[in-house]
Length: 68
Image (cartoon, rainbow, N blue to C red; front, side, top):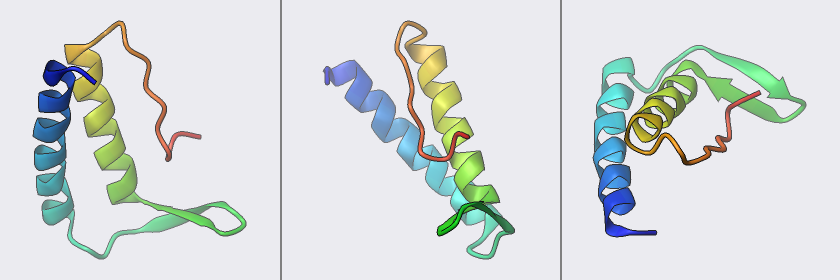
């Protein structure tokens, strides 16, 4: 990972923390699989990080855990 991508990842992780704090620990969830649950916060944070990376590095691919 180059320094530019590392800096972007740190910046996005810090701003994702604000999303988690704003949404609170209790959030609605739904079942993705037999033993796999996803919360609204999970989806919001993943979308935030995906959009941030796509804006900075449009040529890169993104694989997220919560994407169906």
